[in-house]
Length: 446
Image (cartoon, rainbow, N blue to C red; front, side):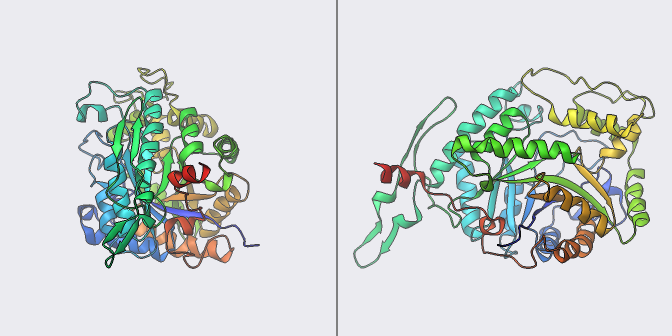
């Protein structure tokens, strides 16, 4: 029996995941729009045998004088470019279901999966930032419940489009003059609450069957959508117990959709600051925190708690995060995680709080030696809390280099992380099954 191994994603947020990473002397801030810089980072991650590069996305972030937030390139374009300069690593980009149409999303990711020979993944989000609505001509954002209802139908339509022309439909017989086997072309006829679609995608099903479907969301609606459709889930937890609860809950929901728990990889975020000694790692972390200006720290907290803290004393007490409850269907999962950090660590001031989440935004922070980092990752992996992790480097490229050179060898030494890529597609490297064309299933059943 093959020993179970970690799945690892390299979560890319430039110039680093720490809110003040841009001020670090090693941060190459002016290169974040350069393909050469992005290529360097991708190749570092590939050298470390990461399963995939993960690019999040959000629109409408405030532009602050002392912060690098609100500046990024379209991740779909980035992974398209990186497909040409990488060979093995998966390529995951975020595209919202709230402000796109299914045909466009299906077409973009099908193209990337073909061009990368089966390494594409779509991170399905519904847009947590209410300000995004204003960029798309809406006065207010969709309610949380409606966003997830729309996302459910959206993913269903995208999957139908991905399979509308089966790969085997391409006969391409020059002698007979026959290009298609029309029995394997399946026009989509969809009419639902949000979308009305008739026709086919103009690309055949992809090397992976279809791109891997990733989802980030831990609300009840998010978990239900993940149990039904996701193949990788990106989530945020602080404690082993909370991560185990989520893991078992989500995997337990899958059977009602005819899915096996192994069809889904749960990969919490892990922000890692690593060095050869614990003292050096703590000094690195403290150095980054010292770059945070109070206005940035308070704006950062305001964004994740849903409460405007801009006029609060950063060395004053932490208020109760009630948030602006415009949407009663929104469970505010991240704000509740941050409340838990306050209670568990006994934090007293807003400065203490933003220093504690400045790198990970509510995800788990691990600061220490390679052995200490590996111990914590292994504990979650071996105790039904995670199938792997989305690794968050404090700075790029150096923070990622530290992880590749110090943590990855320790995980490999323990036999819980691969030394070589297992297959040619992202799906193969993650150990995920190839999806079956639903149109073919229907015809067989008939």
